[in-house]
Image (cartoon, rainbow, N blue to C red; front, side, top):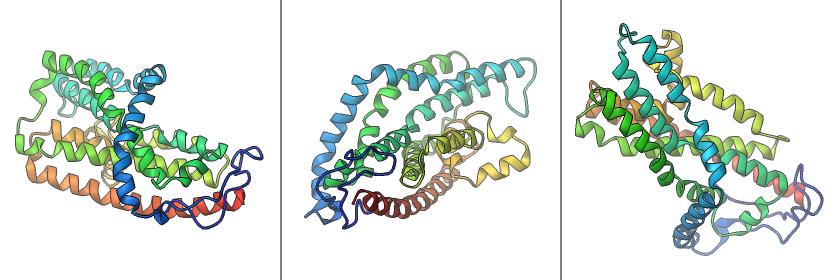
Amino acid sequence: MTASGSTSAAGPAPGVTPGAASGPPVRAAHRHPRPWRATLRAIPTLLRIGVAETVAYRAEFVIWMLTTSLPLVMLGLWTSVAAEAPFRGYDSADFVAYYLSVLVVRNLTGSWVSWQLEDEIRRGMLSMRLLRPIHPFLSFAASHLASVPLRGVIALPVAVVLLLSSGADALTRDLAQLAWLLPALALGWFLSFCILFAIGALAFFLERSSAIVDVYFGVFAVLSGYLVPLTIMPAWLAAVAQVTPFRGIIGIPVQIVTDPSLGPMGAARLVGFQALWAVAVLLLLSWLWRRGVRRFEAFGA
């Protein structure tokens, strides 16, 4: 992905008041000498900035965390349903293990980059990022990665306590299978980040992309397994969910943890599925970004 073209960003971008995006001509990050060396040197600083931003905006961060607690609501609903008899192969312990795994995975793979990117495009602030030798995608990614450990610290204790009390027996104990969990989580985060970054980049072409984010989250909640396990969905809907990238964000990491019948080879195939979707989404994002930045600079010239 290139960060810029050869035109300047001296005027207003779409939806930005005149003068908001004024400044020197934007230079592409890939034209900076040894850009990857500069990027590697900057990553620790970007991570520290991300941690500082998370701490500085801790109230907003906690609110965002609370919005990801829907699995606890679904847990209460489904354990009530399964209290008297298993529902489609799930008993209460299975639902506890599933939804607490969803809670942790959602917190570790979620992102809010689409709103940030849309805001910077609309206000012309993206011009400053385009002047730097580090691609905006990498600077946003480092900032968001820095908040993941804190999210884990908040979500894991709740899940561990509830799992130990009623759902631990439903988790897999195959260490070879569990070895695929870390790559699955990493690819789940990457998929989520890339998709939301692409939606945010639609602000290059639309007045607002946040409405598309709302639609995305509605589809994501159903097809990822966030609301309901894919195995208890109607057959036609489960078949659709199986081939979408959304399953790679939530469903696959959760399945690796909660499906003892999967086995190491099955887990490896699922991670391969995630990797294929990650490459596809990244290629689409690269194309969208190049076109969007050219449009952004043309309006600012």
